[in-house]
Amino acid sequence: MRIARVVADGDATFAVQARDDSWVPLEKLGIEVDTTPEVIARSAEIAESQQDATNGLRDPQFLSPVVAPSKMLAIGLNYMDHIREQDGTAPEHPIVFAKYPSSLNDPTGDIIVDPDLTQRADYEVELAVIIGEKTRSIGTDSALSVVYGYAVANDVSARDWQRKDGQFSRSKGFDTFCPIGPWITTADEIEHPNALAIKSWVNGETRQDSTTKEMIFSVPYLIWYLARGMTLEPGDVILTGTPHGVGFAMDPPQYLAVGDLVECEIDGLGRLSNRVIGPLSR
View 1 (cartoon, rainbow, N blue to C red):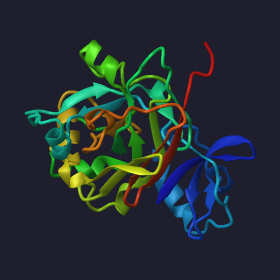
View 2: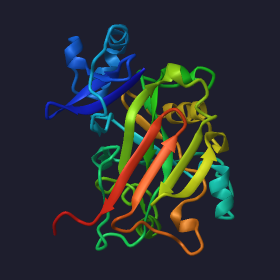
View 3: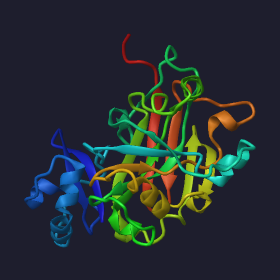
């Protein structure tokens, strides 16, 4: 099942993809929800209603399907090919940082890069994991059972501030720095999250071309690791790291500039397409 948030009659609303590939607003199915945790709570009802849903929206405008998460957690340096391109050493434990909800962006939304804030904006295609139930202290063998679904994310990063700050959260938490979507694909549709092709392009040029098999710490391991010390709530998001091909590791480095088009795709989960723009106002 695919759950999206779309524009319908001028308003933002959650929708389910019907069997005729149209997108049917949940309110037309008698299901009124405003947040992703509310969608998750009524997932069984949505799945049942989807069976007869037809004649929805064709080619709608997609919005971020992640609304009101209690936490957004991200993992740094989690792909071996990304380690190799930096001549680095794999970490012994996951590197965890926060990606703030205020950074959420739509799957076709503009990425704002203010040259007064950063000269080194970079892209990172990532597999996003959306938690489906309250979770604390779970084993790796059952960790995938608490996943609601998966989406594509772009962990946009201000590399200059990432280095200067000495930590990741602020440099990766600027407004618009987390495009995500274009929808959530429920976990039953993805048998092996660590066997997916993952790619990004800038202005049509392939930059990242890898597979989630390159993850150092798998999706089940990350859920186990995070849930050891904190409670994961429905709707929480885990960004699982990025593969090789990021801009700062190129020779010479290739950072994002106003006018660039960044596209991110994961096999079976869809594609993001975001234009880089300058500041909206001073």
